Image (cartoon, rainbow, N blue to C red; front, side, top):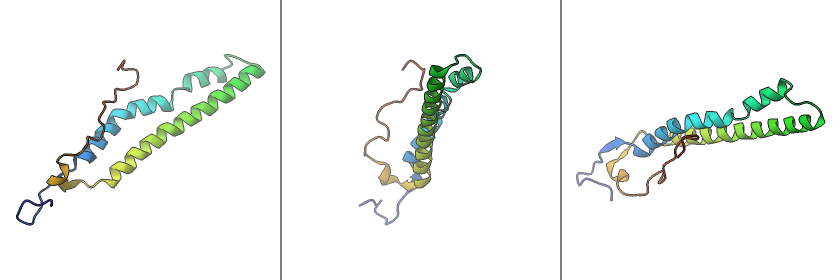
Length: 114
């Protein structure tokens, strides 16, 4: 029973929603880095850094990988936004007690050396 004995429930800010917001903010730069990771190589190939049939095959593969990585980054962002939208702003205080943490491991940004 989740009750303070009075039949009412104290509503508090939803900690899971706040963790989702924090996670989205924390991951945004990394998701952008993933989305644009192949841009310099694609620009170099477009500028003629390497030409010929092998270069064309390489460039096609590079572009395909860039699109896949961009889609994966966008899907991760969209999933977090969907989770965030599904969470209520407030929950009963008793619903915030106990339970497993949302992300038990820290997630350092890419390139942070962590």
